[in-house]
Image (cartoon, rainbow, N blue to C red; front, side, top):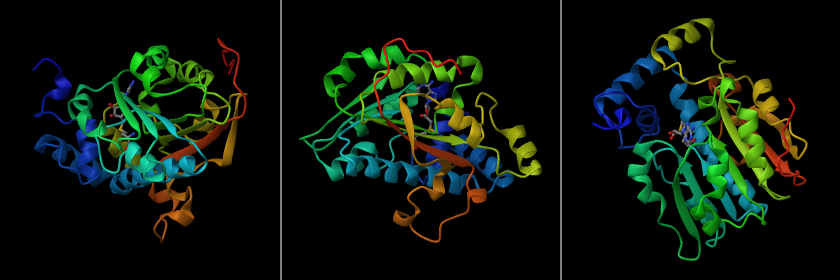
Length: 276
Ligand SMILES: C[S@@+](CC[C@H](N)C(=O)[O-])C[C@H]1O[C@@H](n2cnc3c(N)ncnc32)[C@H](O)[C@@H]1O
């Protein structure tokens, strides 16, 4: 097995996520690990669903604001409806570029490349930690027009970028490429709503390579002069566009994930580096 992430005898985060979403692209090791986590943190399944439903509402929100191009970094194993299905449901001519660095997602990526004939989709086998390579990729350049608004989606991926990897520098590069009228949407796992017992138990079974951030820490990542928050800025994914979601809505405490939505109000000078 060349890449350990393709080894089906060991749990894999994307396959575990697929299991919680009710998908079929998972194996016994993933399900067993998912059950262990769920025993200690029962809200994990609801969190995963609410995160995904937030993605659907966010894409619809942007599409109804005229956004016809999306860059979805951290795509995950395809789960219908995917970003292009939602966007093309509003306008079949919508174009979507997906990017993920996991070879497992690449294996499944063909499912993302089937869109409305009027639109376009592309998939990049790429790493968020190399944003200039993503932006310069010929497939991205052939699919998106970076002089027109883009919806940048960073859904449940930023917790894989630790502070030591300088997430603000990564975001500065991406935001710097977005023209006025673009949007940035992100969700982020938070431990704010876990009891100390849940927290300790979860740490014992979950991988340590990810980094949870509080709502304030998430907002700080996007403290950028070109961006203005939409609505309240940060709140639980369950509370965004609650009027468009099935009720009753869970409380923030039931869902360990925050979401943030921002609009690009001006294009920043190339090479801008946020001092924060
Ligand atoms: C929890 S899944 C989220 C999937 C989807 N965005 C959603 O919210 O339903 C996170 C995805 O981010 C990808 N990912 C993590 N770190 C990454 C990185 N540095 N570059 C690109 N993708 C990354 C993982 O491979 C995984 O597919």
